[in-house]
Amino acid sequence: MLSTKEITRKWETIAQGKASLSIPNLLLLGILAGMFIAFGALGSTVVSSGVGGGLGKLLGACVFPTGLILVVMAGAELFTGNCLMAGPALNGKVKWTGVLKNWLFVYLGNMCGAFLFAWLVSGSGLMAKADLAAAAKSIADSKCALTFGEALLRGIGCNILVCGAVWMASGAQNAGGKAVLCFFPVMLFVACGFEHSVANMYYIPLGMLLGAENANVGAYLLSNLLPVTLGNIIGGAGLAVVYASIYRE
Image (tube, rainbow, N blue to C red; front, side):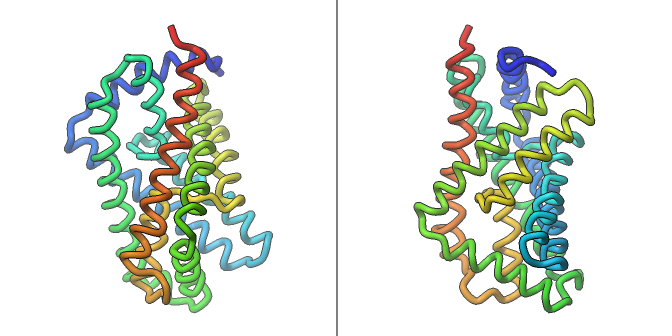
C-alpha cells in the first residue's frame, strides 16, 4: 500500500492522463461508468426490497459497491471519483481547463449510461414484481422530496467517502486490495443514506418511468441532481485539495 504522500504524487499523473483523454473517449468511458454504477444500484434495490427492514438495507448497501469496483477494475470514467483531479489542479500539475473538460463530458456520459440502463430495466420485466417496483418508485419519490440543503449536505458526505475509496484504491498494489478498499467506504455511504449524483441518474429516472407519484423532471433536476452534484464536488474536490495542500512539493 502506498503512503498518502505517494498517492498524492500518483494522482498528479492520473489527473494528467484523464485530462488528456479525447472527448469521444470521455463520453464512452463515462457511459460505461454510468451503467456500472446503475448495475450496483439495481442489485442493491433487489436485495434490500427482497429482505426488508434494517437487514435488507445493510445487505443492499453491501451489494452497491460492485458498481465502483467495476469502474476501478474494468476501467471507466466516473464524475464523482474524478473530483479528485482538483488536487493536482490546485498544485499546477494539470490545467483547470483539462479538469473541467473531463468533468463536463464524463458527467454527460455518466448520465447517458445511467439513463440508458434505467430504460433497459424498466422495459425488461425485472420490475414486474409489485414489491420491487414499489421500492424503486419509493426511492425516487424520497430523493425528490429532499430540500436543497439536505441534498447538498448528503452529496458532500457521499463523495468524501467515494473519493476516499478511490483515493485508497489508487494506492493498493493488487486487485484484491483495490476491491476491499472500494467496498467499505461505499457500503458506508449507502447505509448512511448519503446522495450520489450518478446513482441518482439511474434511481430517479427509473422511478419516473415506473410512475412514481412525486418524481418529475423539475423535482429531479432542481431538488436533487443540482444540489447533490454541487455537494459531490465540494466533498470530493475538498478531500483532494486537503491532501494536495499538505503534500505540496
